Length: 365
Image (cartoon, rainbow, N blue to C red; front, side, top):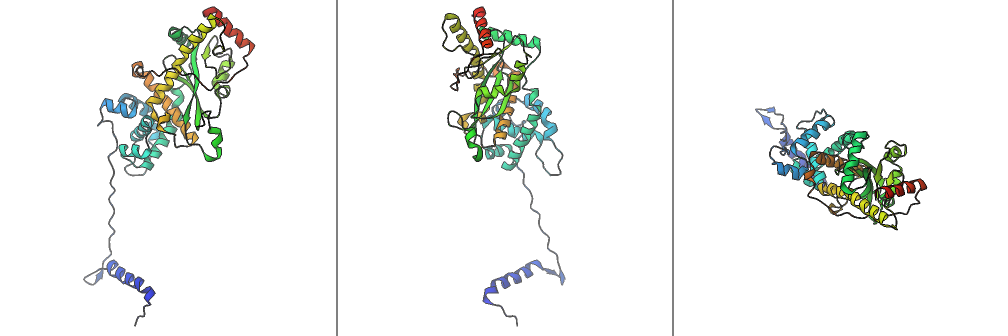
């Protein structure tokens, strides 16, 4: 007789039940139970075929031709061999990333629209960012061809009457959630946390140089002094050419800033033309952040590491330049007002730089 203790009675019943279930017999022979495989259900992936041209531009900011052209450049790094069934195509990964850049929504929302899981959306974003970082210098570069630079100077002169300008330089802040151990270095002058991004734009609102690696506490002049563009100008690569900057930068022989407290009509006219021309980069910032809402402060802080935030900024600048390359009319409808930079710092101007600016004022203003 089998003795069963009360405390083990439950386990005894469970064992007997499993023996009956797991050992069925057919004509006296034991039959092995088959395990039924669960059928995987996949959601429909996003495609361009089902969208109109207007819907494509609203969702991704680029048109179909530009998306496919960009995909041709990136597909070497997006379409990697895999043994997984029903793998996410490279074009779908690119569309997921473009949707995030344009809207700045949570990844869970982007994933639902794209027909993938949130984790797949996150991996797709990482892969697209890495692919863009390998080719971004083909889209964002400072021209060195003398004939083209002369054309740029002429276009800038037509805008406000400022001669020999080859670019306008300024910085903009992109908010983020900082790492806990380095929170203080990302706190900017407005007590929020950000990455301070240096950009140089041309007469057509196209960005020709970017430095996206410094925390929000870094001053504009510090970023410039540690950039490769500063070295190129100091080495005399661009002769008889100037950058235009605000009072946050020190006056240099190759960087023209406003006159502090102008004393005569010529200096006042110089400042007026300087402000008119410098508004181009403020407008470019406004277009960049309105086209790609993930960069705008109204969408909240980016919930990514500082390194990834820098990658996102570079990617959005590349997309911005693609749009500018397509047609100028696409951005003319957005004209934000020129804002003065409140991050000002008094600099001791070098004598040679002062002489250069005074000579410029006397000759042209």
